[in-house]
Image 1 (cartoon, rainbow, N blue to C red):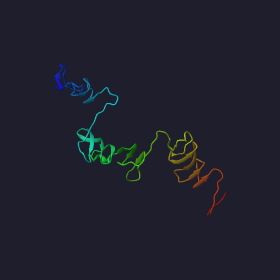
Image 2: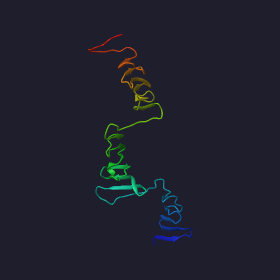
Image 3: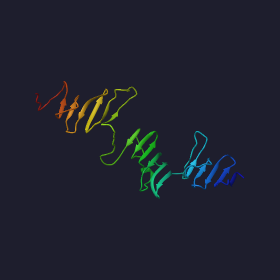
Image 4: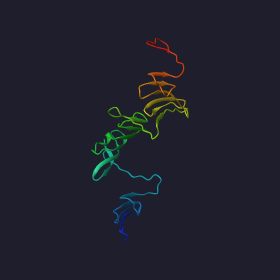
Length: 212
């Protein structure tokens, strides 16, 4: 006999394998423990191995999905799963219960996709309509910096300053597009459609130019 089944007199029902595994059913609270005699949640899995695993597997030999459903009040709210169709780990928040391949977030081959099951870059965001990506900061400045392996401090950046859009290099603001439609080069307060603080050089034909 490979199983030892017994009650311990404390309201717990034990199913233990003689090879080391155990399943504990706790009467008080209705919790289930795997590898622990004191389950703290509805399902509490414990193991002493640093790479302890919990596996959800589909028996389908072809295209299939292994899915963990998350529900609230009897209504499906989200899913975590793997799809052999897209080959991606999918995270989905969908109250309608759409198939996992239409998930909100996909992780595949080191790439992260939002709105796509096949991300083509480290971060691939796709959506319908104008507002695909929104960045918000608690500061007055929201900035995105661009780094390569040799860039540490003075990196190129773009972002917003209040209602203005700003481009910068070397840690300094270089071009500003303000809320009135004016463009400033090396000035943060452009008062004309093009406001340049300093000298500029033009090649070719310039029409309708009035110098003051």
